[in-house]
Length: 205
Image 1: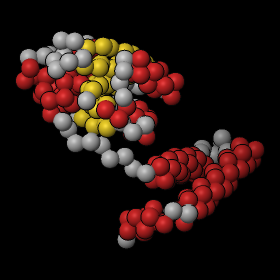
Image 2: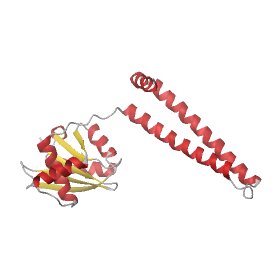
Image 3: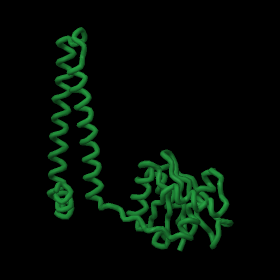
Image 4: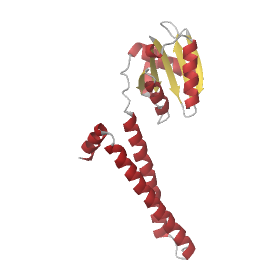
């Protein structure tokens, strides 16, 4: 089994691949937190004789920035664990490691995966991910609509010229149309996937 630790940030992934049973020997690699970066990481691993089916990845949560890499690795058939930063810190303290250098952090994360064997992450289905994305975008549009409606209602009388009001009302109409389109897309997506429909109905009570 190969152990890879990944320290995640918005822009990049700091990776450390353990070589042997300790962190004395390891290989480091930095890639962009993008599809191209993940492809570069796979190439780098392949050149080192790493079989993806024999790879165990431990990665530290970082707001939402770890999600793309986690899904990409999971979809490639790799066992992935997503670890809370506090667990990594406690593990580091137990080893007397207190530095905040990215390379050291990624090695520490790899060692945590090797020693502690955290539970493998169970990724939601692609259908569930699509639904999550649709719902998130729908909520963003709903918030935009609410802001625009509030702005129109609270606009000072001396600013509320006929042309400005008309532009704002047109924008509100446009946002309402977008909300309706997204709701139709969400309904269609749910109805096309029976398992997802059942789970969604349970959530709706």
